[in-house]
Length: 409
Image (cartoon, rainbow, N blue to C red; front, top):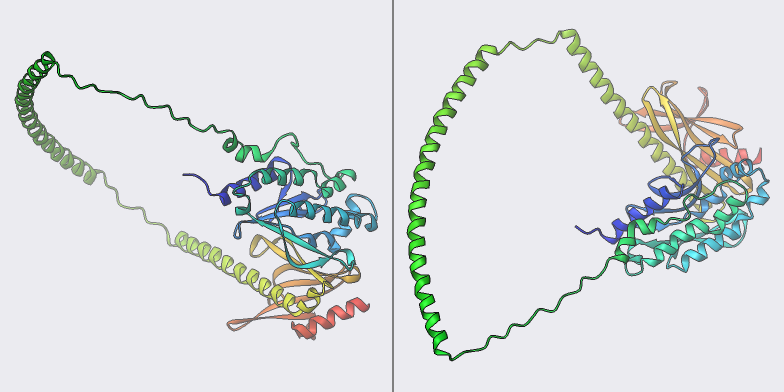
């Protein structure tokens, strides 16, 4: 069964990332990997392939988060003002993608506190159905675009296998396959003959054919009768043997059957307790992660007016937690504000201070306060905690007061 263009493009995206040494992040995202000092699921985001929308997308807002600027300062060992010079490279990169049919999306992003808006771009997989060569150009742009030149210049990253193309692996056979050529069918001309001798031969031949067919029918009937008799005898014998074998097997089974060994009550209770614990753990972890996600969405909604004006940019990173609920991945929400301020909502632990879990709110890694999640019957509530005597409900008013206080401090 032949693959659809969407399936082929998805395969191409995966091959491109793996062949050239990029890192996959959140599905098929092509990321220039960070050095080992930092979480390995982060890096410079070039593009992603959405498996749900079946399209390529850029996310240029990831280039100018507070975290990204600080990390680039450390990794390329230059001041932030040098990293900011990547902006023209980003613009050139986006223009080269638009030349391949990528379309601008979103409301635009003001990069590095500039006034000019820069727009992300996207292209559906179906865009390339009748122009696969543009996918080859897309791969070449990914390998040689100005952003890659920037990081190569600073010794930060170098793409692998530049002499090979993922395009050739996925689509090369389609281009080189030869069309099958139909050979002309030879025409046969039958000439009618009035020759009498030919007519006689034809008549004689027909007579012989009829006699031969009659004999063949007689032989076939006799053979069929014999075969039927043999088959009936064989079937009767087989049935008798099968009955005897079944009787013997049943007798042996009854003789050799042993009583089922009983599992001690202690072991049965232990097994039930282990299963219940695992099930309970998974259920609690799902509630914990779900409530974190709900809380993040509320915060983004409360601060949406500031994000629309590009004064705030949201970003998420993935971290690993090891606590009473096991070992699992959980997201940290970053709120990047103009002026270099960054607030991070980072999950820390579960089952603490009578609460389901704790998330720390940190301002540029210095100021810190806690968010605790409590169960209120069938509902859940987040509270801002400084102490047991200083606790407030997490809402729009209180979160804005906290951010204002930290910005002014």
